[in-house]
Image (cartoon, rainbow, N blue to C red; front, side, top):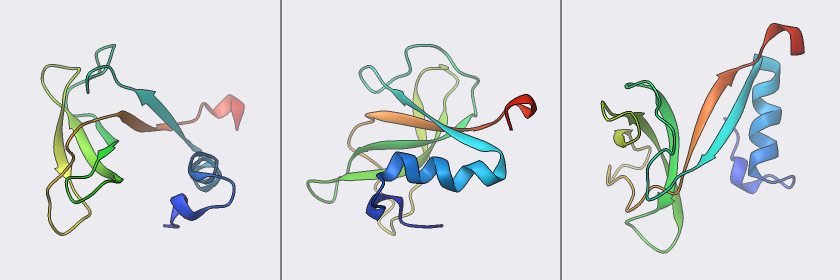
Length: 102
């Protein structure tokens, strides 16, 4: 998997270009007070971005929607510290594209 942050076209476009051949797209959703505005199915996995507890920079983890349907819990932190995030700023969902549009 490429380092999307270092892409010259920007991370979001780079993620979309990476997913397109797989017939997937990335849906980035802003959060309100660290929660989804609209409910989602519990157990749904997503990418969560927020402030890293290890310094003044952003970090991303894999999150899971809780039984509350709008909150998240840590599913996997790719950093060895496994500290997660200090806050949740946005969530990203990998979504399968409709066959009629591919």
